[in-house]
Length: 272
Image (tube, rainbow, N blue to C red; front, side, top):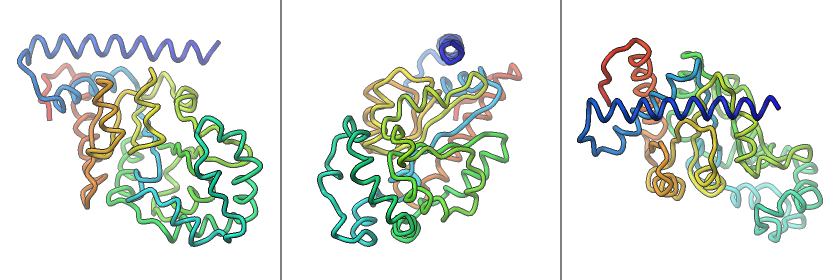
């Protein structure tokens, strides 16, 4: 079918791009031992294989400074409907449990959840600037969160450039599948865009463990996600847990795109 053909086309682009990256390193930088520099080259060759690019972003702990779920619930949802067993439910059975538990709570107290998302979180530095920059460069932006939709809507309403986001996948009574991220990535990938993913921890780990059409990753420095990406030998970069945060993501992305343009122009790469 068409989806299978698309994924096959992306896989072929990755194979060709990675081969070209290895040949380039062997011929021009045979003693390269710097992991970040190596990843830059692989990311650039992959980006060069596509016409455009798209960033897919997690929210909690990625766009925000922490993962403040308990803050949300403690401050906004009446105690009579707070149900710890749903908080402890594993991701595997969540889709079955959610509609009759947290889903009903979410529907009943949507405004509370949305306000909590807006008031109980702090956006990481550089997010607005990064989103605006991606759109100025012609890239696309999507959100993929294992969080509840009204929380996501509340958090994203804090952004000046939230109108730059093309798609938001979050949990509601219609769609509980954003909790399982790999299948969503398979649906979101296109053969025309180099897809990169930006995350931090828990709900992102499965993305590092599956064979997915993700050109490269950004992960919180020293976090669980970054460690898993390194373990799996994937193409990734990190952003710091400080005031530079996604300003650093933007800087790294620019370096990758500049290198990809040099490849397109047939110029020698100067790895950043």
